[in-house]
Amino acid sequence: MGGRNPGPGLPVAPDRPLGLLAGRRILLTVTGGVAAYKAAELARLMAKAGALVRVAMTEAARRFVAPLTFSSLTGQPVATGLWDRPGGLPAIPHVSWAEWAELLVTAPATADFLAKLAHGLADDLPSSLALAYGGPRLDAPAMNAGMFLNPATAANLATLRARGHRVLGSPEGPLACGTEGPGRMAEPGEIALEAARLISGGRLSGRRVVVTGGATREAWDDIRFLSNRSSGLMGRALAEAAWLMGAETLYLAGPAAAAPGPGLDGLSVARAETTADLLELAREALPGAWALLMNAAPADFAPETRARGKISKTGGDPPVLRLRRTPDILSSLSPLRGGTILVGFAAEEADLEARAADKLRRKGLDYVAADQAGGPESAFGSEAIALTLLSARGGRLPIGPGTKFRAAWELLSALASGWE
Ligand code: CTP
Image (cartoon, rainbow, N blue to C red):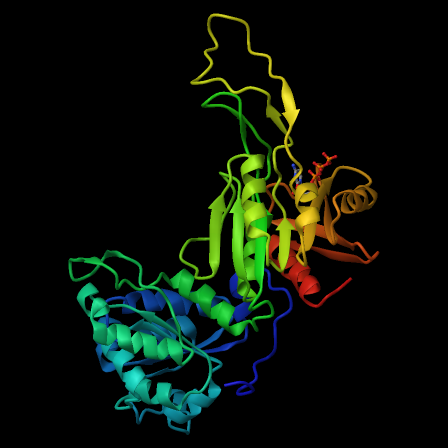
């Protein structure tokens, strides 16, 4: 696989996760299941992100969706028969397209087609292409639950996984045949993200990254709490970027923080209500992690007491809250860090870099990323951010302004390259 069809290289800091697909050559094989209609959305998402998407269809797939749908959505030729010359190309597609592609996505992958892949059959164009192709592959199975659970299918999937195919989970849910169970195709957005992950170089593969994001809450009765304005958008961007770089990623998020969609293998989300909960989750996750990116805005103060039920506003004076400090998570974890890289974030209203550098020292961090809080430049709740990354060794790296995903990608790239 390695070294074939070198692509245009790692795109530098895309604005959005699917921006990683820009300019990449993707072969999408569509086989004959009802989920073929969702493959049209997948083709659209990838083409919109700037990928060159060529589609190969089985005869059965053409009974569900017309080739014209795919050629219209991708602006690229669609191949259907072994002896086609799509787009007037001189060579037969199973040779030239297999050489051309950087990634082969099969969605939907029927039980029959998976069996053909597992056994190396090549009696039509998509199966011949699959046999001739030698690069990374992503399969999105879709079938009736009985077929999915059949040991024959399970064995075929195990064979394909052992050969390095990335096989997406088939979530449980209502199936087109009227039954419920596993066998549904993964959602197009999820497949496109997996494609982006497979194609983007895996700079952090084999590493575990823990990201925290969003605000925690400190309750003063069962209904009410103290919190802050952190949206979790930057935390989510960091988690997505780490995952897309191939890291096994854990995102520890406040209760209302923005989070990546479920279903991405290798990206888990756990919610923490209070600052003490977040400290516990982060402490458990720390051993062996390559980096902890502490982007959460933990509530710094908690009410000393918490009333049961809901304090009524009638009949009595308004309550007076006495506050106590919550634990400082980074300071608590820094003595336990082992080899984990600790990154703090500092949103400051004034003296940005001096205050951030002070936090870096006080909390025993390797890096701190400073940004402007308050005023028109504030990143709170915004899609955009400008950061200055400071290192314990005196390095200074301005990042952005740009989207939070771009900033997250640049920040992680700096860490991955050992920038100091
Ligand atoms: N942080 C933490 N535990 C807390 C509060 C903050 O680990 N209880 C982390 C944040 O996640 C961030 C860094 O410390 O990475 C800096 O947070 P910030 O709120 O800017 O700093 P504070 O320590 O709260 O200091 P100050 O209130 O003086 O700005």
